[in-house]
Every structure is written in structure tokens, then in C-alpha cells.
Image (cartoon, rainbow, N blue to C red; front, top):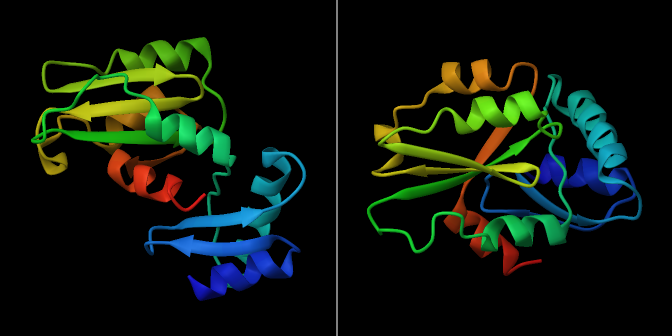
Length: 156
């Protein structure tokens, strides 16, 4: 993570930090998130030697995601993930993602992001990478446990 933090500092970003060795970086910058996404992705590819799909969200967006409660109060035995999509979902993608819901996994789109409730521990999900790729062709995602995002918000 230190290499990645240095890359962001080299791009002129401020207040650069990382969180929990999870691939989450915190930084301050002016400008649009889409521009930062492309700039950071290219810089990381140069530094690391491989393509890095990069997702940039504002502090306000992360806070909204972490504090949304689309499933109400969770059973402590359940797992709640939030998925960032690389690009905003189309109406077709929104329908396909929500159609993944079943008795064990519930999926809802809230704004730009996807909330995924697994009614057990995460390894017991019925949804794997294949289903997500079919629902979101050409739109990569990154998933974070909602508890990690709640702790991340405390650092924003």
C-alpha cells in the first residue's frame, strides 16, 4: 500500500492514506471523480506493471453507502456487502442485478451502488462471480463488507 500511496502523492493528491490494507485509499483533490479514476488507474498501472481497475467515490458517496439501511436491522448472522460499479448501472443492468435475489441472497440497487445481503456467512452465498458478470457485462465491481465501510467513514 505504501507504493500506491506514493503514486497518489506523485499525482498531486493531498492527505493520502490507506485503510486496513483493503485497497481503500483516502485522499483530497479537486475535480471530478471520473477524471481521478482514469488518472489513478493509469498511474497505478505504470507503477505496478499491471492494469488496476480503479473506483473513486467522494466522501459523501461513501458515507451514504455505508449508512444506507436497505435491509433494515441486520441479523448478526447475516452479511451485508456494498458493491461499487465502475460505471453507473443502466436500467437493464439494474433489473438484471435485482433479479439475482433469491431466498438466500437479496440484492437491491440504491443510487449508483448495489447492496447485497447474504442470509448467512459470505462463503455460503448462492451468487458467484459468473452471475455478477452476466448481470453486469463490461461493468466491473468491487465489493466491501458494510462493516468495513462504516469504520472507513469514521476516518473521512
